[in-house]
Length: 268
Image (cartoon, rainbow, N blue to C red; front, side):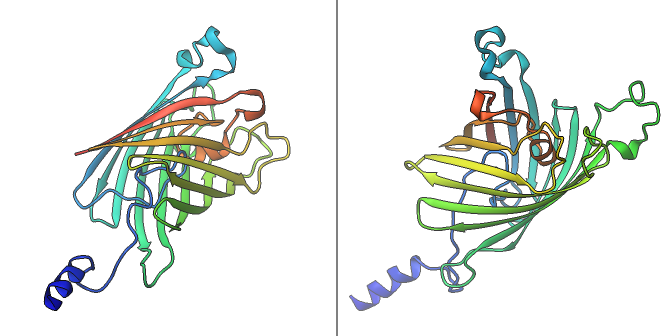
């Protein structure tokens, strides 16, 4: 009988003695910000994202449906700890190439955090020589560097901090520095076996004083259904890449100027 107990205990632990925290997030994104979840080894994920127009105009724009933008994002897991991705968004016709890599993983007895790096190179193809005669290709480029630091507090609750640097070679506001800094805060709380409520907020640290843009605040729900993760969300940012939602969020929650959208993730 004693031997039986020992065998059962071994089944519940890692063979190396390392027990990692798992399922901190179900989606690759919290809402706008990247989460510390990565695609698995040899996994290909397709994330189809829609962000409709502002709902404040009501039925005139069918609550934003008339002004929707779409983002198609492919993410491939080279290993369990290294991902590459490529996407195209109809917001400013942006293409981006991304890398995401885990540096530290939260352990039940060891590291209290998971730390993931995220980098992106963006091309804003909406900038054209017809409108900007002196435009060069390099002016279309943008860059993102980000650390994602999460902790699964308990079985239901996860928090994440995301210090971020992003740079746009072309900025809309003349007084805005091309190099910009932000601090993201997000989290996930499980409501049931397959449901969770998620939220994230980005504090821009050097926004120009005359900028009309706002800090992005987003709230959403995740629903896991087998190989799909379905995310419904509301945000004051319509852009879905990091430089866009941190640098050009133009909605205002206080007057109902917010955007409804969803992400549908499929694993192959």
